[in-house]
Amino acid sequence: MTGLDGFVVSKGIEVQLWRSDWGMADHSVSILDGDLVLNGDHLVPGRWLRDHGDDSASLNPQSKQRLVDTFSIDRGVMAVAVAVDGGWLDVEWNDGGRTGHDLDSLLHVVAARRLPMLRESLGFTVPGAVQLWSEPPEPHWFSVRVLDDDSAWVEALAHLRTHGWLALDGAALGEEATRKLASRVGYPRNSIFGGVWEMNSGAAEHMDSAYETFALDVHTDGTYSHDAPGTIIFAQQKRTGEGGDSVLVDGFAAARDFQLANPEAADLLTRFAIRAHYVEPGVHLVAERPPLRVDANGTLIQLSFNNYDRSALLPEGGLVDDVIDAYNGFRAVFSDPARALHHVWEPGRLLVFDNWRCLHGRTFFTGDRGFVGCYTNHEDLEGAYRVAALG
Ligand SMILES: [Fe+2]
Image (cartoon, rainbow, N blue to C red; front, side, top):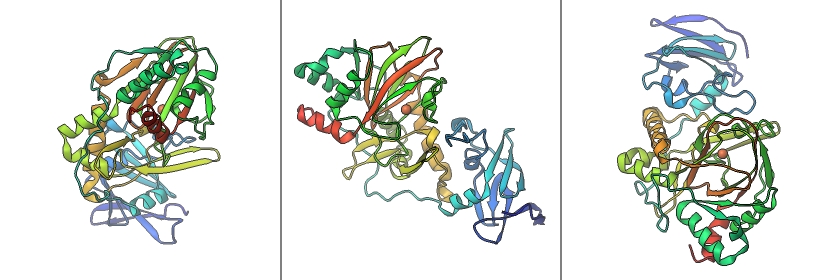
């Protein structure tokens, strides 16, 4: 990478040059109507670029999790000034913000612009045999004793099947209840977090926002995994402060409602793959799939949405606004607080939910908070339903 090679003025537009590691050729960047132009002909929409800074205010330097509030970016945001220093681009925006961008990375993203996948049918149907909820049902806590009683367990499993979540109360502290619950819906799945893991606030065993204390937007886990966890189990071990409720949203109900209101946008989310990543020392996972994944029959089978872990992926030119509007529009539906089911935690309580259907988040909390948790696979959950004649 060489330093700033110089400025030229072309047709009244200030053009800045850099030399890329990609090749020895000089590249140029300029502004046109608030968007950026790379090498004279690659238009990078300002609205998209504002959301994809590589600077430390936009992206956590260690975990590469996103820090930008994607959903507050103005639709008409415009770049007003650019400066190139080596392979680094600084952009000043008309909303007062500034972002920095690695120009080589940006070139790669621009070269890999994406089209939606082709599908024969439009939209999706939601699975039968489930009871979608757009408003939170009353939290219901089964006794942990259902884990030791086959017929009582079928009733509890039916609740998980129908509603997408199941809460248990009265467990002894430690891993045993989590392992027992996992064995009822499959088995603990090994991942970068281990099999059955402990998650303590402030401990930062992993570079993930789950270990912080701030409120977490609702999301699904494992968007960076080709096979995202089928269920997530949490069992609270310790709680000293206030807050920290688990928040659950029925993602399938939100998808249904979004499709009713905006069928074209919902259909686009079944066809445009979103990429996600997980980065920590020695780990770099990447996967991609549409936020609304449908099977060959057009049935919605999996929801994937985690804005913290989303990677930079640029839609083909004419689709940029459509994809952003669809993504933001769906998020506006499922993040409506009126949909949120709050589970208040106490040590001895467990929660298992379908990570392919329900989004989960967390309210802000104070004090210490400790959990045991694990993931299980979705095919095992489906198998448990079949075995119990709930399939
Ligand atoms: Fe999570």
